[in-house]
Image 1: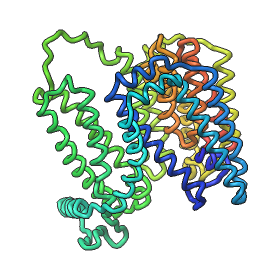
Image 2 (image 1 turned 180 degrees about the vertical axis):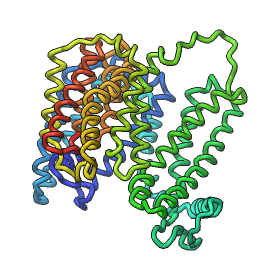
Image 3 (image 1 turned 45 degrees about the horizontal axis):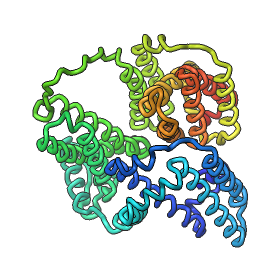
Length: 502
């Protein structure tokens, strides 16, 4: 709801000092921590939660509670955005409390009946209450620790390593160990604690531990734990190299690229490469990998494996986006290159795509038109000049053509293969219970929405595409709807020159 205020009404609650906004943001943090903790508890206490959720299903009364809660919350948004009085804020806060209670209560009653919740509370007892409180408080404790932690030692090591790298390259720079600044007369950076690589270390730790758990049957323990310190060392070294490359780009006459592109996205590129390296090395080296004595299942040829066909195009799509954002001041200018990469990977998997049950469905067409209409209605104003500004006539035509084809044809196939083909089917295969299907739609729609700047509108579109995919168990219905929606939006963008709408 806070994001709806920002996207639809332009109300920046995150910049407001209203007690209402502070409470809303704090509640959101608590919900994040509580959700993560309950998920972990569910993994560790499967029997307890299994007994609770044994009859979970989509019921009408809880559904009506959810709808009523959404309606109450949504009805308050225009009044909050108009700048209500103190009395009005109190009334809106009460409405949010009522709406949130109905929303959460309906969700809980879909998961289990009142009697099962009563048995769960008696069985879990005080331990569940303590865990829930700890989970809700965890984000606030983390924020307090972060404000007191500076990581100066790690920043010192990173700074010294960056200076050594620049000296090794023979690049003349001026460095100040006290201020941790390094550069030349035209470009200077500060290696602050936030640049020390601590975020990368945390991400690598989380990824490695999850990987070790998921593939515990394929890895030799305890020697497999060596992967973690190796990954941490590589992460820190690669972060130091990232800073050195950033300085090199900046002092070479491209400060905008260094700060606006490389600095923002190179960290994600490094994390992706490092994660792949950890997986490949641990699976390739006999030192880490267990040799199973039981006969293994026959391995399909790489491009005949449905999972590979559904994931590979999306991996190329995301990798090209990350590379373009890292090495271009305006990533959109490199879209023709990305379009070529997308076309190439789709050609590789074309036999699988061709075998899909392609057909024109009126419902899919109607859904595509509906998505295009509301996407255009809520489109933002143009943020900047067209990406092809300054191109010659030939390059402009090439850019526009590649953008239209990529948006209308390539992207819908790639995204639907992954989100509604692989992810949705993996989470809720054919014949799964209703609750599993609802959770699968939610989980598969969330990253799809996060992939788009306008995530509220994208979440609605993702849910509709999922419904089309499940309606007749046909992926091409979702692809067709996605193509129609993107094609109409791209046509509108060409007509209005508002490329930020795509």
